[in-house]
Image 1 (cartoon, rainbow, N blue to C red):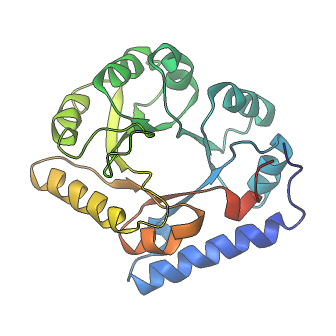
Image 2 (image 1 turned 180 degrees about the vertical axis):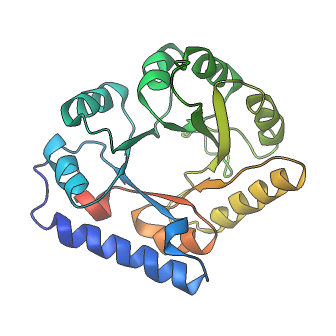
Length: 226
């Protein structure tokens, strides 16, 4: 595991500048894009430094690693997003400790998250992960399956379906436009979705131009993992 990069302030500033420039080119407000710092494989010290620099949203892929970081930081101003593949037998901790889940890909997981979300907490924000390229190495509902899954999730009482997420093949940015069009199609049929979770370190600009509201950035902020 890496020690936090010495130039983290500069890295974070450059990422923010990239988002601001892309938003301006797309005629969007920079405030319409949330920067999600992906801390997978990074030490608590790096996340603490990023938080001190004003980063408020953090995404984690691995549950036990994430729970340790949440406990270590104990910062109520931070918003935690679970962005990894979620097994049905590990939903309780996610339902209890996170504000967002980005990779819901089947109804059973959504039902468990809803049942296990504490009633004193606000509804859990969720996105459906869509596997647009039909990659066997990645999870996600197909585009054809997504409308029915969205309709089912929207009825669950302790969840708030916010939108769609994708993890397209590297360099194939045309999938970003397809995800946007899928969200627009769902909204045209009566859904009320406001979130596109797409774009990472290499394709921030493309994602923002295509309407991303959350960009998930790890390497460009924290450097390579060990």
